[in-house]
Structures are given as structure tokens and as C-alpha cells.
Length: 608
Image (cartoon, rainbow, N blue to C red):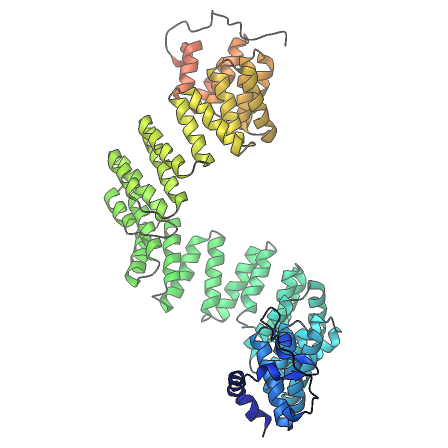
């Protein structure tokens, strides 16, 4: 009986033996099959006398083959690859069958028995010298054992010879092999391989990519030049050369390179796509559009090209053209949500609000879904339909709790803009019920409490937030500033603002808060330092109002007026700024009244 026939019938034999209860009787060199074939499985408890290897159970060599094949199969099925590899290798050695050699190699590899994998792969190559997979396993096994690079290269060359007509497969094998190697060893390997095959496009391309990975860009360019001198229209090397130039901040040269390549090979559509994208990245939108249009003329239904042209047309304010591209996408049934979204944006910018709502309403899911629900609500607000906008937000179906909270937050913000504070508070409360530890909602609800004059719940929300995030600078600053502004708990307010400033020493709004609490505490000189620093970082009307007030109270009314006048030029309609100016020097606003110019406050301690 030939071994191939036995192997082909092993499954039948295996199940027959199981049914007869014979599996428990098979031993080899004193080892029970269950013990060998898989740790963690139920082992056979009954022990039998050990039998000589040439007992009646092995009346012929065929029976011995069958026995070893069964053990190998049981081990493989139970995940004991080391045992499977041992028996498959024994079988392959006896039979010189390439399929058994392959199974032995694979099992040894899975078991991480690389020495055995090497032996099995060598046997596999010996019986099947033209099998590239055998060479690949041998190369990988040698690399795992850190064998000399020269030996690895020898087998790599043999593998390449067997795959001389399959460059893509060679390339994939090379990439997979190098991924497992440390950069230094991979470079040493590729240098020797390039020395052996200096004109092999696959080798050169792989080497160039490795050099890019280790940031040896000049060397990578040189390797690509060698490759392109032999294969000037190499599909991957041409755009990779442009990529390298761009990576070295030579974008103009990269664009010139791609243009020249396309002049020589105008039918290389993948190159043209690369060139078009590079032009767009360089903000050469008009030229990019021309390149995309040329591609579209060859592939008129290509969704990605239509999308790119639509976006670029918007970028260049060619709105009509953009509409056409997005409508074509819808006609083709591609990128529907994206097309609807951009058409909605276009209609909204053209103030065609009903059409904008129509396009947005077509979007039922995806990345833009929540965004368009917010846009629909804002459009309804603009159309004077606040209640309908709120109804719309409440009707939006979402499965994610985070999305539901976002919608409630938006609802609250829309209501706050209309000064419908109690309804806004209801929205925040519903959001907190969904997620009691939402620091964002706690913060916004606290600010609303303050706006409504409810200091106790304002402070309670911020203290709760700080228990969750002790270093939340927004909460620390808001609590400190409001305590300084609405109460006389100045020392406590100073403590919170000091913590915030330590965490964010350059934040202009915290610098403003520190200046303001110091002013409230009577330290005007130091307050002015902080307020001037804050205003230098950000020209903000509230900071200008604060600085002007402290300067005025510090008897520097000229400087105060200068600060206020400059601020009013930048923010002429800011009501808080105007109220402060009106209180001290209404003449700046062209109004009559005495203000506080003749009434000096004792707030500042000039000894400090």
C-alpha cells in the first residue's frame, strides 16, 4: 500500500478506530496519544502495558505510517502543533511526500519550533524544488533563528527564480518577510540582495520602501533613480519618487516630476490621480480640477472623481459646477449622504432654506447625521420656528447615549439664546439624568444657574464637577470668578482661580479672573498687571472693561479712557463694555451724565 493512499484515507481510518475504541490502545515509545495530542483535553485514564514498536499492531510499514498519520492528525486538530510537526516530519522523511513535508513545515512554524521548521522546509525544497512557498518558509525560519544573512539571501534568490514571472507575488512575500525583521537586520539583508540583483525592479522597490521607513530618504531616491533608469514607466516607482520629493519639502519638484511623467505616459490614470491630489494639497485648485476632469472623461461614472470635483468646485466658488457633480453622484447612487450634505450646504448658503432642509432630511445615518439635525434646527430658528426646532431635535432617533446628550445640549443652547431659561434647564436636567457624571453638561448647567441668579445650585454643580475632575480649569476659573463677582468670599475665590492659573498660566480668561479677584481684594496694582497681560494676549471687551474700571478706580482715568476707547472701536456694540463705560464716563459714548468721575471708591489699597 502506498503512503499517499493511506494519507488520503486517514480520516476514514481515524473515525473507524474511534468507533472501535482503538485510540486508547495506540502507543509509541511509551507515550499515550491523549497525552501527546493536546494539553488541556480529557486524557485517557486507563493505562495499558507498553508494546514494542514492532508489535503485532505494526505488522507492516503501512500500519506504522497509518499510526503516525493518526497521531499527527489528532495533534493538529487539538492544536498541539509541536507533536503534529514531529510526526508529520517523520512521515515526510520516510515517504518524501511534498504534501506531508508542507504540513510538517507549517505545524513546526505554528509551534514556533523554527529549527524543526527549517529542517522540514529543507526537506520540502528537496522533494519539491520549484515550490516558492517552501523557499519562503525556509527564509522566514532562518531569519527567526538569526542565521547569517548570506544564507538567507541564497534562498531568497532561489525563491525569486521560481517566481520570476510573478513580480507582485514576489513583492508581497518580500514585504511580509521584512515586516517581521528589525530595521538593521532588514537593511543588511536588502543590501546583500541588491548587490546580487542590482537591476531587479522588485528588489529595488522593496529596498526603497525600507529606506523610506528608516528615514534614509536620499538613499531611497538614489535607489528609485536606478530602478527608473531601467523601467521609466514603473507603475509604483514613479509616484513614490514624487512622494519622496514632497516628503523632503520639494513639492514644486514633485509636481514637476509628475507632470513630466504624464507628458510621456498620458494614459497612466493612477499617476494622474496622484498628480491631481498633489495639486489639490498644494492649493492649486484650478489645475487640480483640470486633471480630475481629464480622468472623469475616461471614467465618467467614477464616484470618487465626481466627489473630488464637487469639493474642489466649491473651493473655487464654482457653485453651479459643484451642484452638477453632487447631483451626478446621487444619480449614480454613490456617496449619497455626502452629496446630500453638500447640496444642503449650498442651498443654505444661498438662503434657500426649504431646499436646504430637504437635502439635509435625506440623510438618515452616517458621520454627518447629527450635524445635519443641528443644521435643520438652526434653519427652523432662522425661519422663526423655535418650537418646531425644539420638536425636531426631540424627535431625532439616536441609539447612542452620547448623541442623545448632544442633542439635549443643543436644545438647551437654542433656548438660552431666546432667554427661555426654564425650558433650557429642563433640557440640561434630562441630559444629567441620562449621564449624571457628564462634566460638560454639569458645567453648562452651572453657568445657566448663574445666569438665572441661582448661586447655590451653580456652586453645587461646579463642586460636583470638580469632585469628578479636580483639575478642570474651566470649572475652577468659573467658580472662582463668580464667587469674586457675586459674593464677598474673595479668599475662597482667589484659591480656585490660583489653582486654575497654575494649570493654565497663559490662558487669558484665567489671567482676567485673577486680575478681577485681586481688584475685589483691594490689590489694584497687581490686578492691573494681570489684566494688562490678559488684554495683550486677547483683545476681549470684557477684559478691557475690567482693566478700564481698575485703572479708573486707581485714579488713572486717562489710561482707563484710552483702554475703553480702543475697545469700543473694536467692539462698538458690546453691551457689557458699554454698561461699564456708561457707569464711569458716559461722555465716551457721547451720552450725558456725571458717571463716577467725582466719586472715589475706597476699593484699592495703594500701600500694596
